[in-house]
Length: 484
Image 1: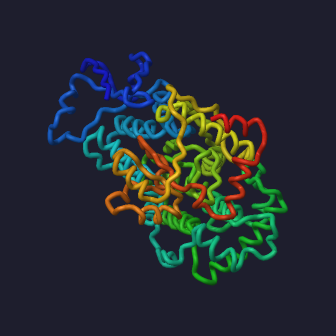
Image 2: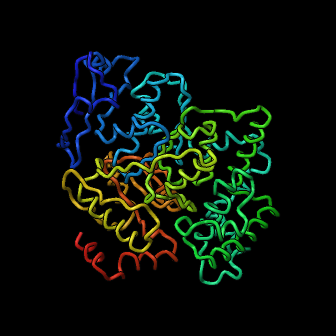
Image 3: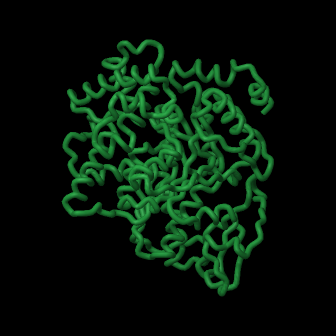
């Protein structure tokens, strides 16, 4: 670690540092990434000792001037950035800044995964004393806690994409579909638009066919009118089947919470405010209805949210997120009286060197070529130092993976979510906690990473798509990809 030490009289809050410190970068001599720089005052140096009370204390990481501007920006803030560009650092420092302004603020941090919640909580706790007003919750757990009437929401009756694809699709959804729409496309229409829009959640009923086919712009829903009609007819069969069999999906639960809180507001004369500020990481995995619920938890205060994410990193099946969704929610809940600014952009990668980023940039280039409106385009990420490209390792068995994990304590394994259990079972029990699924690995930072059988473990119907995407397309982008 590198520490910058300032006199005790100098203001050194994390969000104020660059007002008096020139920008500079130090390179970590043990790797190809920048050295993490922490800022402390002479008055807090004692906290670096092994004092029992503060033994887990850590000084805040020094921010860039751009990150500082984002953290100190007033109102609801949207931040778009690829992985390793400082989004989570901005969340942590925004929480510290808000707490500094008002020590009694009720703060909520939420993300899709428990591991990311735990990671951010650890960062937060390392720089503050006991914070009884800050809550860190996985979104699914938050929704479970908010739902007051649980009848009809038994876990065994829950429908996710896996169940939809393996059971419901073949039973009720594939008739008259023809070759136009695949299960994931239809599930996305149901999950993100027909049932997952703010409009459907706030009133407690799905979008009508005319609302879905005629009112959603092509920028928001990329299907043609004819395809939307097919998707809606499949939704009607799906909805009827679920009602007849007591099944429910996540958007049913969100809608139920909306209705419960609306009834509370009517009985109490005002909308209950559970949190004063809400912070979300990996927000690209949230539906518009879920974002609307976060605003509702803050009393529909359109200035209370701090949301960071990257539309190119959506891993939650069925979510079609754009940052414009947040702005649309604010427009609707304020009846057109309020607006929030466009997202801030972070493009400088501090986590990875150029050897990795050259590959990731070309993957994104290929995705943008095939799916031109699926994610927000940003300038190519840049690394501060050069480094080796990722390596392809051919192994004969999982014993080799086990040996690599034993030799390198920093190494972590990532596998497809539906393949993770198989990988874990092939490892000794003491190594299984170092194996992650894609979703639970999102937002975390690893020194050394091994991606196991990503392509060979995918569904057979996806193999041809990957082959077309990365092998068969013959254009200039393909030449660039091979050159890396």
